[in-house]
Image (cartoon, each protein chain N blue to C red):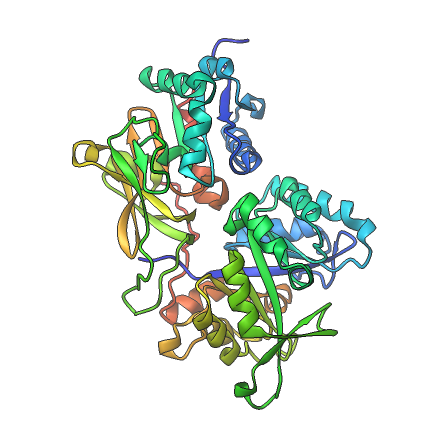
Length: 269
Length: 224
């Protein structure tokens, strides 16, 4: 056996509430991030990611409270991102109980933050999120640009060079989102995923566009077998909508020859 | 101080102790015990009084060894006495590695030397059977294969656990008997060791969902 490909449900959180809600049978409060995280934990998520999309910095304490309550009962790695600007933000999130912090715009404006966080907590605690958009929608050879602020700001950076740079500076992982595919359900931008996987040494999490179980499999299948070669597949809608359970996703990936964790833990102790 | 009532999580200042503390509390509650048994401290006096020690830690072997040997080695001595008395000990990640003598990572630093052997880094450029590049650190879920029935009793049979590390222990031939579990990442490496009531694992039970909480429940059952 070898290290398993990871399935990571991502919850968008605003002012302490899950934005789109999660359609789960038996969920007490589909809008409570703690309830949703607990449900995904029990359903066999390999990790859980919270993306805070709260506009105001003042609402930060609400998020920290959510993180703290989640960490009390969720025993898989928890990543928290969104609006992380300073080293103090990072410290507060990790102190509240997150295992990893994801930074995006702040890494672009202040790349030294990457070294600072990796130096203080180790690489594994830092995820650098890259939102990439094709320079030419129909031609991958034109490359991808790096966008920030939810895709509104073009940084002028090239996604592959930026990925190499954050890897060299100490990113533990890259959370790679295709802005072209995000929310479309058309599948990951596999050319983007492959290009970044081949460019860096750190693990890559594919994100943006999952609509089917096939899409998840393609993200993490080896490049030699037509996949993206990512280490992990992040998805939101496909799980939140209740179309597919994590168990179904896992079974499907296994049927495609992907090594996934078997979360069935028989009481054989 | 009551007579050995506490499970002490040893605070050497490396890594997030609270997640270990939280998971131990959950395991205690699941076992019908009081979660208040868990304490985090770096006070050698409290270590000496503990019913059980849990030594977590993420980061560098050298930092961990230095912290244990600081102030005349009071912490190292307390841990050594605890182990000599065969009281329950659970080492996690660095809490496993530091039981060995030395590490490639820190030339001069000495571990506790409970087991003969060293700590080595994964080679760069490893590939799996399908030619995919294997990354260092080894991060994510992987399987632990117990070496025998006694090991399976606490590790489970081929359970999946969450790993984050670049270094692994290499017991010397003489101390090979301590090997309790192995995992594959390029090469096969030792992911769990045991001797008497000492258990130590390379993975993070506190982040390994039901499998991890199950292991911690087994551990706390062995604590009087």
